[in-house]
Image (cartoon, rainbow, N blue to C red; front, side, top):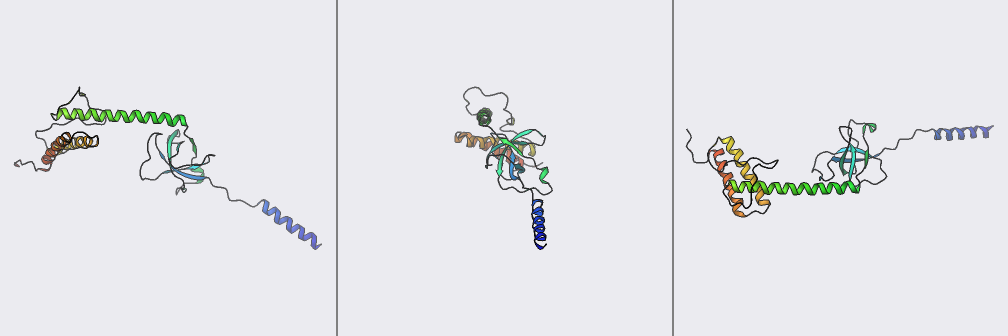
Length: 213
């Protein structure tokens, strides 16, 4: 009788163990930034958190595709391998990383980045050539008649204007001096742009020697 009771107790313990509720395994979390495949990550800022269920190991800098705000697949870059679940979100609300970018996609993105870099350099050089001509400096070849996208029209090199306008004029010429410095243009060119900028800044600040009325 005693032996039978013991067997029943053991059987009950085993049965309880079989049906004991287990803590669900949580997926790994990674932090990403939405970036084109050829774009470098931003410095700082909070990453977006996604779950990682892929067979490959995640790597910082890895280029992946995730679900974007529109619901479509968008490119991204991994920036954090030890992310935590954001406050206010349940596990079911976190979207998964879809996949790594393929070698073909990365090569195509690299070629696009190189074309973009070449275009930006040509635009910078063209704008500076327009600035040289506007400043009265010798300019070989033909300068563009319209400024490239992302660049301001070149303001006058002298004259008079309201202080606020003079400040804007000075900013354009100061930008030209900075770009000329970065591209290794001759010192004469750099200083010409800077001198024009300082003249406009003097008008902006009321330090141009004019008598106030």
